[in-house]
Length: 281
Image 1: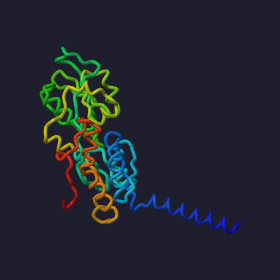
Image 2 (image 1 turned 30 degrees about the horizontal axis):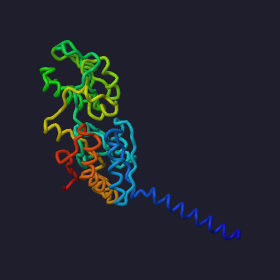
Image 3 (image 1 turned 30 degrees about the vertical axis):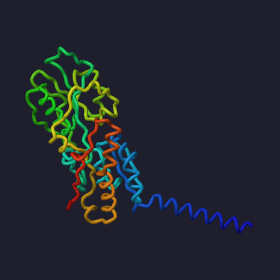
Image 4 (image 1 turned 60 degrees about the horizontal axis):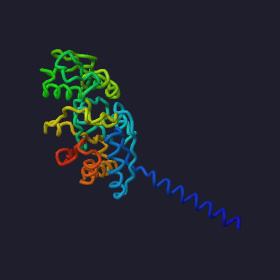
């Protein structure tokens, strides 16, 4: 009887070990780091199911956007999903990353701040993000909507952070603030330029939004991408297969439908933004 129990126990341990190994098989596990909203939401609630049907297990890591490119370059993650091509172009790591596809677009909007007044026409402050790519988008939107008359060039450090903390354009003070501090800065500003994911994460009331980007070129140029390692994609068949499966899922009609239903126009995901950028495509 004891022998039978021992045999059964050993068999159970072997099965458990096999199951665990299968669940964590690096050949079929795709690890993606992403920003919380809408990126991780899309991955967890739409892409995961599509990949499961293809035999892949998706693991999503929500980490700070400033270290996501390093996480992919260091092979801690297979890909990331948080940025647009302009920001990726600022990356200076030794491992080259590439945009595998464009997925969705997050309109940057101008929101009323705590110092807002309908009578305010000059000598007011606007808070914008201090990373160069979003800062330039904010300045162009402010110019297009008549808040400022020009959009100056901005010097940035090696991480893409604008060096100046504040600039004066006409009679408007533009304060450049870290993305995670933009929502708190609303209380002390007449206006704040918020990327859609920042507004979503900060639960900012959409009734405060006055304007947003609508230019088709901006929609195309600033669509958020899936970034991966180009050399591994070209030389490692297993890695390429995982990235291809991930891209196919992100470009699917299922994802576009999920985004439309979940975010109700705050995030755009359709034929304008779902674009395959893989080599040879």
